[in-house]
Structure formats: structure tokens, C-alpha cells
Length: 370
Image (cartoon, rainbow, N blue to C red; front, side, top):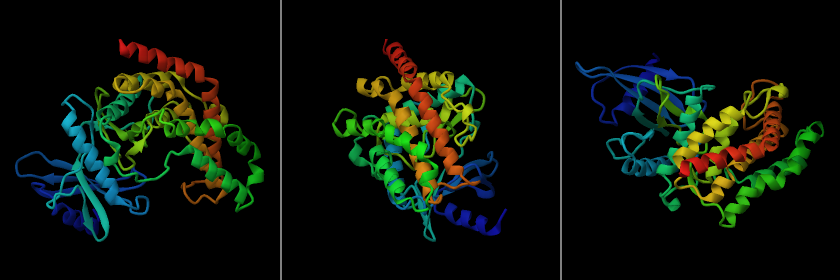
């Protein structure tokens, strides 16, 4: 253990009513943004208590007060609504001053229980894992479906405003700061052909056809803790991007991640496509949990949400490639170009399978409505 880190954790710990003595910690390396520590306490003759201490990345999250304010709002709301059998959401302890965060040397820290007997999955082919993931994110939205939107901060304005994302992309193409646009003309044509499709959901929302919901905005199934033995969903985590949005964005981003036949940056495009088995399993779990509050218009556009969010991410990857890889961290030359082309290929396959995708949603919604 690093002595300086240990002292920092002890200083943070002193701001909370945590019984016992800090025994040891381990740095968690599976996160990409915040600094996370698994901390163990010795509490007399009792078994060791375990907690998660996390330092928020102030570079990524410029307004941590708003982030923690949103988390406080939704966890309070969920506690008032859920039963003990429900999948929970992560909640952070209040410190001695009654805040769900502690500021130390300009850094924002937060503390929560470590969820025992849990696991998060980085990959999943097990149908139970996919159904549980779908159910957890659907239940997350269901529990928050009656929370007024004016109680939440929009922490990342225009995060999924795909019309603006398309505008930003073509502005980057026009500027072409590194002269790379001529190398990706066919990729650019893809976005030109599908610009209207990509903007459809935001246009419908602005026209009042689709309601704003409390959305997670990072619905990868590794953001769900599941029971190691049963695969039952225990807890939805990583709430930093929670804010008002469209239900179809959460569903679509989860499908983009869970039902791709390849990894997100696969360079061999022959391996990339939509896995319909995974798609069906996740969809069934999601709709089972959310059917009683989703509008018919939302259900009608869920499959489109998967296409829209995949196009959006592809445009962001390609724009970053044209701009010199300033936003997304790369691990090899042309990494963001490979990511973009992978997402383009996935979106194209989704378009080919759109009718089948929509049929799964329709049939599942009818079954769960009975």
C-alpha cells in the first residue's frame, strides 16, 4: 500500500461515520475515468466491513456538484419507491456535514458500500446475464419514471443531440485540420446519407412526440452488479452521466454494446454485425421492466434508437480521428478510424435487420402487456 494514498483515504474516512479501523485498500483498475479504491475496515470482533472510496475525475466532470446533486436526487427518489426485491442503484453515504461527497484538496470524494457476492461482466453470451442487464436498466427507468425533470441538472448539454452531433461532424469535415478527410470519403458519405435518420429522434422529442426520461447514458452491462451465483441484477452503478434524455438512447446504447458480434474497435469488419440472439435476450429483460410506463411511441422507436446511437458514436469517433485524436484515448495508429468503421458497419447491419429488430420489440411488448 502507498503511504500517501493510505493517509488520503484515512482523511476522507474521518469525514464519515464508519465504525472500526481502516485495515487495507486495493486500487481498482477496471474503471477508465474515476480513481476507485476497495477499502476494508476492521470492526472489533465483527467481520471485516468493505467500502468503495472514489475520487471523481475533475477533468472529465467539470461540475461535480451537479453530478452529485443528480445522484442524490435519484437515490432519494428510488429509496422511496423500491421494494427490497428490486434491483437497486448505487447510493453514497452522507458525510458529517450531510453531503454525499467530501472535498479534499480540491478533489471530490464519495463513499459507498462494497456489494458483496457481486460481479460485473465485461463480455456476455449467457442469456441470463443479458436478460438481467436489460431488466436492470429497464427497472432503473421505471423507478424514476415519475421524477420531475426539473429536479435534475443537464450535466452534459446536448450529450445525445444527434442533430447537433451531425452538424459538429460536418463542421470538422469542412475544417479538416490535418488534411485527413480525403482518406475517408466513403465514410463521410455514410453520414451524409443517414443524417436525417440520425436526427429523427431529437426532432420527435422537440415536437412533443417523445417524453424526456431520467436516463443513465452509459448502459453497458458492466455497469450492473449481478449476483455471482444466480446472475440476478443487484445494483446499477456509474451514475455520473444520469440526466434527462430519451429512453431509446439508453436502450440503443445498451444494444450497441451488448449485441455487437465483435468488440467496439474491431478492425476486421467481416466480424462485425448485430447478434440477434443477444438482442432478443436484452430486449425481453428491458421491456419486461419498463412496459408499464413506456408510451407506444417510445416502444415504436426503440429499434431506431439503437441505429441512431450507433451512428452518433461513429460520427464522434471519426470526427476525433480527423481532429488528431484529442478526445478518445487511442492505443494504436488510426484507432479512432477503426472504431468509427466498426460502428458504421454495425449501424448498417442494424438497418438491414431493422424489421426483425422491431418485430422482437412488438411481440415482447404485446406479451408483457397481457
